[in-house]
Length: 244
Image 1 (cartoon, rainbow, N blue to C red):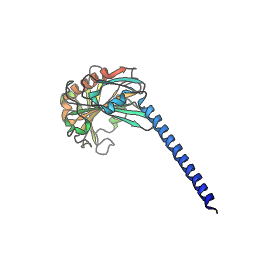
Image 2 (image 1 turned 120 degrees about the horizontal axis):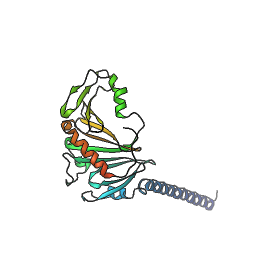
Image 3 (image 1 turned 90 degrees about the horizontal axis):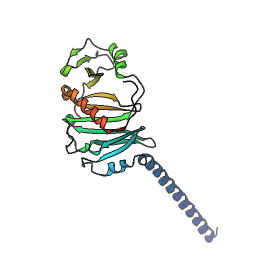
Image 4 (image 1 turned 45 degrees about the vertical axis):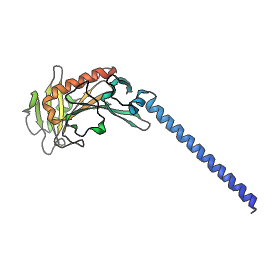
């Protein structure tokens, strides 16, 4: 085979390889742009949230999450959880307890002890029973016995050792307009302290799950009131929740 022919064929191969690489690069950039736009174009403030220091007490971030507009003080935002091509999945908030609106914000990675923090996650509302219905139709089948009096007018329900809920205790409290169901783990969490949690339905599309160390259970009423106040303040546009 003549040398000039071999050289020409090599050049054609090199040009073809370069073209393939160029097309691949363009496709990658285009896909990255689509993902970028999907995440941030509906919520342009998320860009600044991820980049800037959230120490300005007056700075608020506008977020659209599940057709609900939120206006959240930047100092409360711990992290924004997203999934590829699925957009924003969860908004995590946190604040030191007792709550102080003027307190200096702390980054999640700088918190060494979560015992004195309240963690609030805004999540997509899932189909299923309301807490009251779950209590009446499911929990009551697994209690080890009648409830006992607990701190701050709570009633404590203990599950039987063989129950699927044996790793938690259930506490039931009463507010003027509804009952409150708090579950407290018997084991330490990945964050360190044993945590109690409660789920609040905000509207038809989103819910809030808040958690705090079991040591603060005597203050559950104040924590509940604070979380409810924050939710009321940050939900810029709200649609009523269906059911409890």
